[in-house]
Length: 517
Image (cartoon, rainbow, N blue to C red):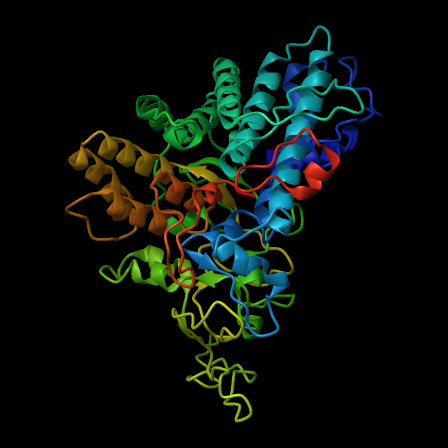
C-alpha cells in the first residue's frame, strides 16, 4: 500500500477549514469554524494539520489537462491537434499553439482562479494562526508565506501584473487593484527572505510535498533567474547564490531517471518538492487519458476511455537524433504498438481514402496502430495515429480516470541545469558543460563537448519535458515567440504574459488588462 503522506493526511483535517471562493476580486468570506489553541493547536507541531486546502489546491493546478503538461502545448514541445471531430474545443488549442489566445480562454481563467484560491487559503490560515495565543505559530506562518510566494511566482510568471492580496481581514466589497510586475516581484522576494530563517532544513519523506528552506531557495532561484524578464534587471549573481544553497541541501540525482515519475517517487533523492498522486486517496492526475490513443486501453488495462489528445511535436523527437541511447527518448511513446503477447494493435477507424473528398488525409499505415513522430497537421484533420504520446509518467496498469504517478514541482536535475545556465551566462562554458554532462550521464547519453545557449535549451527540453518548465525557459532564452511548425508568424512581444481573465475584469473594474489584449 502506498504511503499516506502529509499531502494526503492533511485532507483528513480539511473539514476544519472553510472553502474560499476561487477569485481575488470577491474576497468576502465567513469563518464558520473556531480554530483555537485549546483543542487542536495547543501544540505548534499540530499546526501542519490545518494547512489542508492550501496544499491540496496544488492537485487542481497540476492534474488537469490545463495544468503543467497542458501548459507546454503553447511551446515547441507539445501540441493538441484537432483530429476531425475530436479536440476542436472551440479552437482554444489552435489559438494556444499560435499564441493567439484571448482573455476568455478556459485555461486563462482556470490558472488565475486556482492560483488565487491558493493565495486566499494561505491568507485565511495566516490570519487564523496569528490569532492563536500561547502557541508558537511563526514557523507555520513562515511555511504558509513560502507557499503563498510559490503561488505568486506562478502568477507573476504567467500574468505579470496582478493584485497583491496579503490579508484575509478585508471588507466584503474589497476589489483589489492591479500591481505592477516589479511590485509583485519585490513582494515575492521579501516574503521568501522573511520566511527562510524560520523554515525547516529537513528533507525527505516528511517534507516531500511541503515548503521547506530549500523549496523557498528554489523559488527564489527561479525568481532571480527570470528577473530580467520580470523586471528588466538581471539578477544572475543572486540566482547563483540561491542555486548554490540548494545544491548544498543534500539532494542528488536518482539513479533511474524514470523513478522520478513512477507510482511512488517519494523516496527519490532528487525531489525538492513534489506532488504525491493516488487515484484513490488523491485523484487528480489524468495525463494517461489526455494522451493515449483510444485503442491502447486494453494494453494498459485502463478502466476508462482514453482521449487521444496531447502529443509531442516532431521537433522534440528529433532532439534525440544524435543519441538514440538517451533513455529520455522513452519519455514519448511512438512506433507500431503491440499487445504484451506480440499481437499487433489495430485501429479499425483509421482514416481511409474518401473519393468524395480527396482533400482529407489518408493514413498510409492503414489499420496497424503506428504512433508516428510526424504530426501531419494542427487542424482540422490530424490523423488519429499521428504524434508520439507523453510517456514520461510510466503508464500504470489498471488505472481509471486518474493515475497514481507522482509529479515533481522542483527537482535537483533542474537545479544542476540552472547552475550550468548561470555559469554560461557568466562566460564559463567549461563549467556549464560539467553540470550538463552530469545530467546526461544519468540518462545514458553521450557527453557533450561544447556548450552554448541553444544546446543548453535543448538539454533542458530533453530533461524537463512535460514538467511545466518549458514556457518560462523559452521566454527567458528569448525564443518563445519564434515561428515554428504550424506557427508561421513571430508572436507579438506582449504574448510572453497572458491576459487578465475577462471574467475577473467584469467584476472588478480596478483590474487593468495587460498591454496588447
